[in-house]
Image: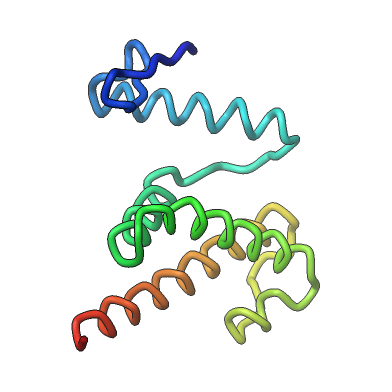
Amino acid sequence: MSETVEASGTRSTPGAESPADKVAVLADWSARLSAELGLDISVDIDAILSLAGVAAHTVIRPAAPLTTFLVGYAAGRAAAEADFGERLTNKEPADSEASSNAVVAIEVAMASARSLLRAATSDTALE
C-alpha cells in the first residue's frame, strides 16, 4: 500500500478515492496491524472513527488520536484486571473469556469517553 503526499499536505492512497475504498483500506490496515501486534480481535472501525470524530469536533482535532489511544489503553488495562466490569460499569460481565472481556472493556471505555464529550459539548454551549 503506497501513499503520496499532495501539494496541500494531505495524504492519498491510490485506489482509495471512494468511501467504500477507504473502508477496505482501513479494514486491511486493521487486520494487518492486529496480526503484527498479535491481537485476535474484531475492530469496529466505524465506532472508533465516530468517537474520534466527536472528539476532534468537540475538543480540538488532535484530541481524536489522543482519545482513541486513551480509550484503548484504559480498555486494555481494565480487561487485564479481574474486576474491570465492576470498576468501570458496576456490573459483572456475562462472559469471562479474555477476548470478550477486551471487547466489553473497549465498549465501556468508549461509552465513558462519549459521555465526557457530551458533557464537554454542553459546557461549551453554556459559555
